[in-house]
Image 1: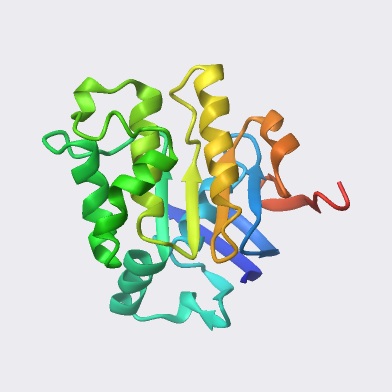
Image 2: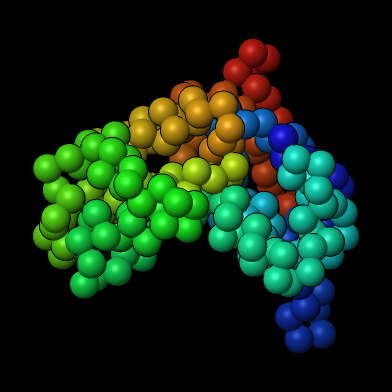
Length: 223
């Protein structure tokens, strides 16, 4: 269970203070496909960065399995990102001189899952592309390698920032289908940040942000 408790994030830009998040509270459960929706500047990427331990809130708490990660010292926060969080970004960040299998293996080794790399790639539909290098893969295939790399860590939290922004509509739909399937793991919470409202239709949980505040928070049962 991930809990955001009255989380505020402010930045200084010269003499001006900018509020990116203005006291947000929400619960994100494992085994759910959660979508954070909002226009550019709404605070959704800031929220994702805080959940992933890439930034710290100005105030408030972020609880993961009862522990306040926002109070972690730097080294423990690094361990949290390394051990418990998988990241999938719009651009794939693959190592160009490594094959798809080797790219996934880097992450799999972190949690002792190296022998499962091929299985994970097969699960995302890349059984026949494991020995290909990134420049031999399509955009959708590279994104699937990135997803496989993220889930190879067996993360508590799989965070995806606009993961289909560089893909065509059909390929993007396939990527969301894969992420939806990842959320069926009862030990993993999948959180996708997007400005695309169509994704809400397949989500278990939708959080809508505007101007740094939550304006709607609904699960599929009450949507």
